[in-house]
Amino acid sequence: MTQRMNYLLIILALALCTGSSAQEFQVPEVSTLPRIDRDSPRPSRAILRNSAFILKMQTHPPLGEAYVILTDHKKEEYLKPLRKLAKHRNATIVKTTSLAAIHQPNVLEKLKEKLKKLTPRYVALAPRMESFRENMLLGAWELLSTLDKDPYLDAYPGILPATSPANFNALIDRTINYRSIGQKDLKPFAISQVPSNTESRSLQKAGILRKVFADYGIQTPTLAIYTPRATDAPKLKGNQVWNIRVAEKGKFVRKFDVQPGKALNNAQLVIMHGHGIPGMSCSVDIEGIPSQSSNQVILSGSCFSAVPINSDLPRMTSAPGGYKVDRRPAFGTRYLDRGGTVFFGHMRLSSGFPHLYPVLENWLQGASVGEAYQQLINAIIEMRGFRPGNFIVKTPVQQRRIPQNTLLYAIFGDPALKPLQPLKKIGAKEAVTHPDQKNQ
Image (cartoon, rainbow, N blue to C red; front, side, top):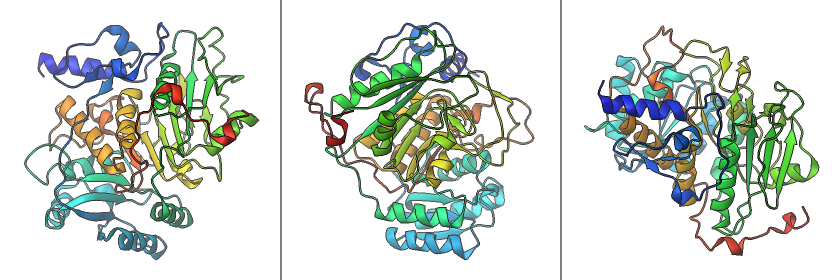
């Protein structure tokens, strides 16, 4: 491994949600944050410690214009909604015995030949829940990176998971009926976790988002959740900021006070930063996810927010932030069950803001779910030097951390769906106040 490669690994290791360390609390303009790729100069330790940088995205044209659905569903109650989506997108459904085996050479080669003939622009993966696992996702990257000669993904991907036939049908209906949210109608909501007096990088990211949306004339109601150790931690200033404290570290938020609860319920876009474990993201328990809300697009920068029910990797008993890892449902799939349409998360250890923000930024510019997803994974491929043949984790594996961890981002949603209409900056002083926010 080259010296340059060692340096890149150090950068990304420091960016992972590791334990707390002293951080000076500042809220910079997003334009001042460095954009990092493999040729970038080394950022300062403060930048790395605060995850105050952004991964530079990697563009790559798709192979063609077709929409392809890859699925291992066999029951009619799942295939019927897929045919409905295929009709809506003029898509071709390609069935395989098990998407969990997508990385197996014989399965991989058959699917590769089919995709080359179909020349896809979009590839939607619709796995059974038991098939959604790490090597399924890594196998998809192996497949989509080998449709031409370069090492990048050659189509725009998206994942369509379902915990039940009814939930899957509802997700497909929401997808088909979805309309990109316009600037005047957009209501975001930011949630940040403050674990201690010395770890405030997640709160910083909420402050950055407030500045970003203010430039588009949009207010960002913000909830900051303080753990018991954060007795003297910094606080954000401004309107529409609520601070709450959990009584115990292992006690997570399941119910919100009236004002932040109303703002959250009305938000179509929810962005979360902080630590996470299965069943919890940024100190919000899965039982705290609102039902029948306006939440349609959710981005979580926490670890394990898209954790699979079956794993190809060794079980972790503890997570960054000192949390115990229990076997609970994923935050992302629960959000889809409760009415979400698009969810960004990670199957294991997330790098948070540096990888989340460029996806959000693409969507703010009108990109589709799959285009932003492809650019993120291609940027990681370029940054880390992955090549076809080394995406898959060879099992059994013993080590807790693996190089492929950084590729385990999961975006649930139709790859052709465009979450937002392109936003136009109008200046922070012209911030729009929605009618139902005036008295909060």
